[in-house]
Amino acid sequence: MAARKQLGATAFPKASIVFAKIGAAIFLERKKILVRPSCIDNNMMAYVFKRSDVDPVFFYYLFLTIELGKLVSATALPSLNGRDIAALKFGFPLPPEQAAIATILSDIDADLAALEANRDKANAIKQGMMQELLTGRIRLI
Image (tube, rainbow, N blue to C red; front, side):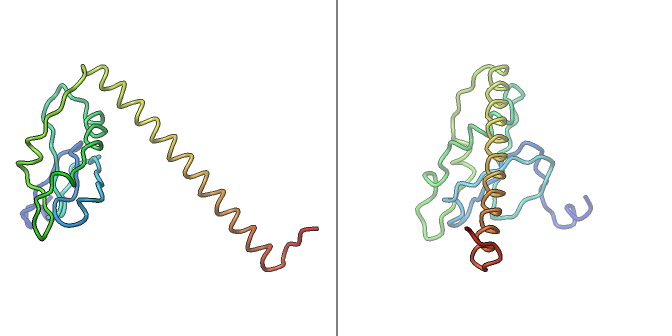
C-alpha cells in the first residue's frame, strides 16, 4: 500500500476489466478481469462497473465481445480514450439470468482449459515418442 501511494498509482477494484489503451496492443483485443484490487501500467485502461444490479463476470464476458480496435482514434499512435469507452451502451438481462449465463460461460472456459491441457500433454507425449523413434532407442517391428 505504501508503494502505491509513493508512486501515486491508482488501485482499481476487484472485477475491473483491464485492457490496452495505447499502441498496436489494442488490436490484440486482450481483456482481463481483476481478481483483486490492482494497479495497472500507464498503457492500460480499466473499465470499472459500479452498478450493483450487474454480475461482474457476466459483464466481463459481454465486454469480451466488444471490438476495441474499432473505437481507436485514427492517429499515428493508435489510442483509446475514456470518453469512447464510457459512451458504450449495454443491455442487460435480469441479475439471476446474468449469473446463470456467467456460470455457463465460466464452465465452458474451464472445460476448454482442461481440453487444452490434455491436448498439450498428448502433444508432449507424441514429441517424446517421436524423439525415441528418431534416435533409434525404440524400433518398430
